[in-house]
Image 1 (spheres, one colour):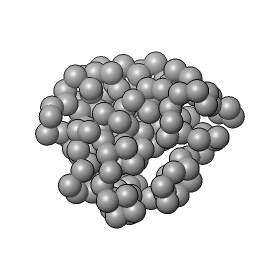
Image 2: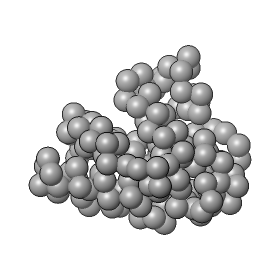
Image 3: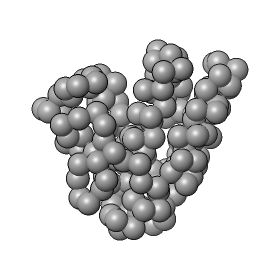
Image 4: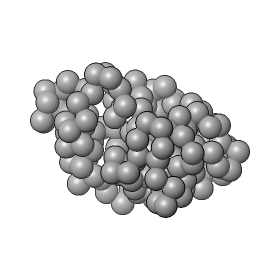
Length: 143
């Protein structure tokens, strides 16, 4: 990715990691056979000088990794996981939002466009029920 705002390659990598977590992850023991970026705990990522709790900002992640798409994707996965794991989010509803937002992305989408696609899907299906949670997850990372 050329900037801290991500790129479609990072979004693709991140959505794949998030999808893996939805299918195979749990609170204490994620599957280690898949999801190469996710290691040992659901509390975060452990790879290439990235803080294990993935609380780094998009700018920090970009600077630490030179914008490498897998590492920027890890940030996107962490944002999605933060939303999904919120105690006020219905998992089935967010899965519908998540899958719908993928259809709205284009080859030039970045994290901001992905956020807007998530919000658009939330608005269309759930009358904006998760808008604040989505915005907070992105803004907490400087996006």
